[in-house]
Amino acid sequence: MLLTDKTTAEKFITASESYTSPNQRLFPLTAKVNEQNNLEIGGCDVTKLVEQFGSSLYILDEKTLRTSASQYRSAFEEYYSGESQVIYASKAWSCMAVVSILASEGIGFDVVSGGELYTTLKALEMSGFSSEDIEGKIYLHGNNKSIEELELAVDNDCKIIVDNQLELENLAKITTEKQKSVSILIRLTPGIECHTHEYIRTGSVDSKFGFNLHELDDVFNFIKAQNLIDCIGIHAHIGSQIFELEPHHDLGGVLADWFKKALDLGLPVTELNVGGGLGIRYTESDDPPSITEWVKTVSTAVTKACEDRGLALPKLISEPGRSMVATSCITAYTVGGRKIIPDVRTYVSVDGGMSDNPRPITYQSLYQAVVANKMTAEFTETVTIAGKHCESGDILIKNIDLPQTETGDILVVSATGAYNYSMASNYNRIARPAAILVNDGEASLIIRRESYQDLVRQDLLPSRLG
Ligand SMILES: Cc1ncc(COP(=O)(O)O)c(C=O)c1O
Image 1 (cartoon, rainbow, N blue to C red):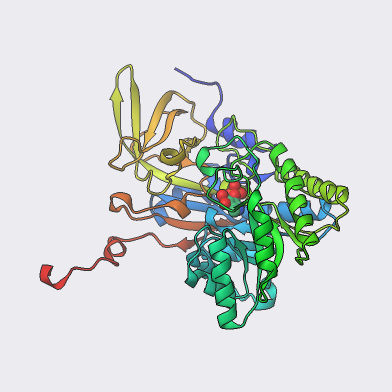
Image 2: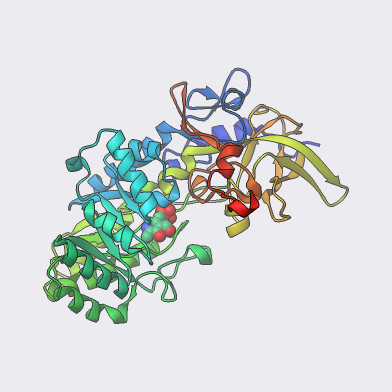
């Protein structure tokens, strides 16, 4: 029985072509169906990539990633008349190739740990960026930064987005000991609600992040008394995978109020950071605004809020993560067996799952998939895609319409660039997949596939057991 009169190619690839904003597309900009009727990304046949690099496999399309970066940058140039800087929220996917590509597009970096900071610094050094190229473009976040993380950031002249009083006190000690000043932004909890998953909502009053508004007067006064801590800005981030523009509009007003308050108290603030949060299309029914629409909303809101309060335009910082990288990447899996439960469900198993993509089991996130070697076949069955982990909840996609699948088919899940590799684990001691970068028909390995040796590399046996 046919489930729709369209083929995969018509339903997903052709249908996406009208969207030029990468975050609104299900598949990367370079996705097409080649003469063999296979899915092609970045000029490479996905089935051939799996033959060459193995399965499962993250496939990152360079053109889509660069397009997201340039759309963010050019939209700020068009809609914001003050200075602006886009910094990538590395937590979405921190690896050397992503850092190198985005840095070459003029993007800065928000890092949330010593590990992300180290990865960023290493990638920039190895890609030949000078300290002038990246000066003032790396920001350290986190609600419980260690002394070592703070020291690494201070030593490398990063700006620090301060989350709480303990951190301020630690920074006061570190800067005094080192006799080195640091530039900070204050993260505030703006009390703005948005409709997103509870775990990824960070701007409402009940959040572990940032200072609540009633604390700010004391915080500003504490900073004023410090010689080596310069408060250069105010920050807030209201959540992730947000489709509404209204919360970002409202945020402009809240931030401008506190920016003015800081100025009135004599703090030398010049930067206003609106965080990230723009959503992406994971499934056909998702309908996020474009990158340009989001930037326009943020820019107009901040401009108007500043004009209303008689403020000169601050340097406007934004921190997109998901919308920068998610739809640049797909994950290819190989289909294994199936379990048919008559009148209930058919499970089709693949050689990956919650260890390479923990979002479905963590956030009940929805995904779309296609069969890379059957792009022009008709949809004939509704199945559930099961991961290979020992966990009943390890389901990648429930009830998806697909062409008839067989063992050995290549199933491709779209929009896996954000919070997939970066949240991947070795659950069940499953080795993490490789990642490759594709562009103009060339494929390069950017993250090696883990081996069994990698899995035991950190294990030790006490001598009495050996
Ligand atoms: C402080 C901060 N900035 C930026 C981001 C990036 O958000 P998104 O990936 O939704 O753009 C996050 C993610 O939660 C965040 O916590």
